[in-house]
Length: 170
Image (cartoon, rainbow, N blue to C red; front, side):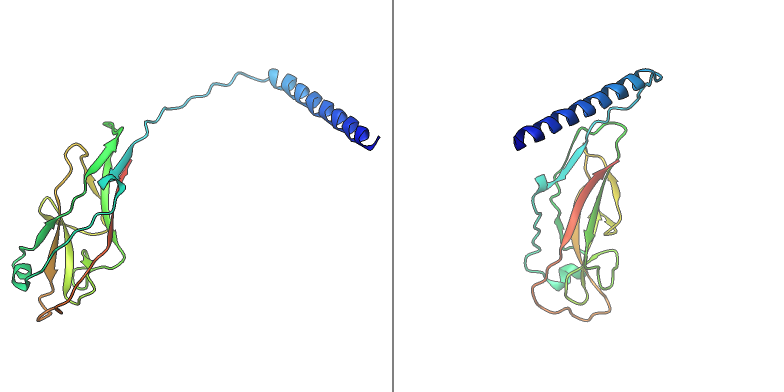
């Protein structure tokens, strides 16, 4: 008998809810016509290096090649953007948590006086500053070691720098 009482209450509650819905539906039918407008946005997705980590090795470094500005390595970025239209602007930026010790626009290596500079088409590009790229003709990106002239001789040890290269679109 107890189960039947709950079932009757459930049916009565359902009728009240449905009745309320029908009343609301009738009240809404008396309203004005509404027109919705929108714009279909084409989704653009950009990836750098197929979303895989990029590892760059400078190998054994000779101080004289760094001083002469000849120790550069390519940064394999492999930028791919799908769905980019003429109205989209694609930017890239290299960020790091450790800035250079003498060149604040570069990346630090953990060795006093040795920094890494980002080059875009051979010209210095500040780390942390976005730059516009053409996905169909991406820039040549390189990393260049640079020495602080105020440091007589950097320590002879392994070094590393970590950065995040991202691409964005607008």
